[in-house]
Image (cartoon, rainbow, N blue to C red; front, side, top):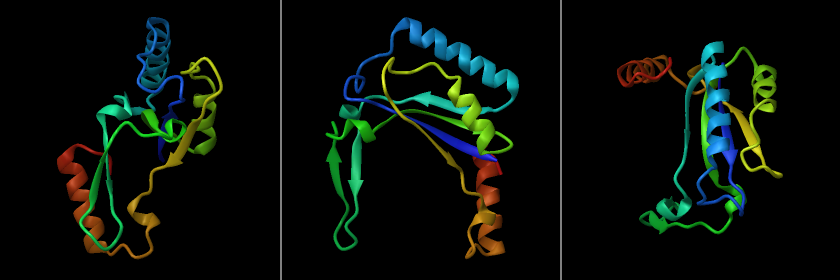
Amino acid sequence: MRFMVIVKTTGATEGKAPSAELLAEMAQFNEEMVKAGILLAGEGLSPSSEGARVVFDGKETPQVVDGPFAESKELVGGFWILQCRDRDEVIEWIKRMPNPHGEQGQVEIRRIAESSDFENMTPEVAEIEAQLRAKSGGEA
């Protein structure tokens, strides 16, 4: 199973570069996950001030809203894609990660949906999705 681990920002950390100490701790943690064979991808994200949101209202042309975004506690600061046997294994790994903020914060864990999770997925669409993943280098 693949999981997305979403590291949230806080008001105090949004747009601030991590310390050299935190970068070293995260690099060591990433290395442990690579050695365990579970890390598929992981990156930090630039601040919301450099981002944009595309807002769909269902009726009109989508609107673009430039950052920064006010609700910093809901912003994603970074992510990992982990391949683990189950949710419990991911939780055990994330409980060991360095605290990215040195204070109270949140890390969200979500299983990545597979084609078989969608009851309306036809075999034809599932095959197209598998071919696209293979061409893009993604996991099947």
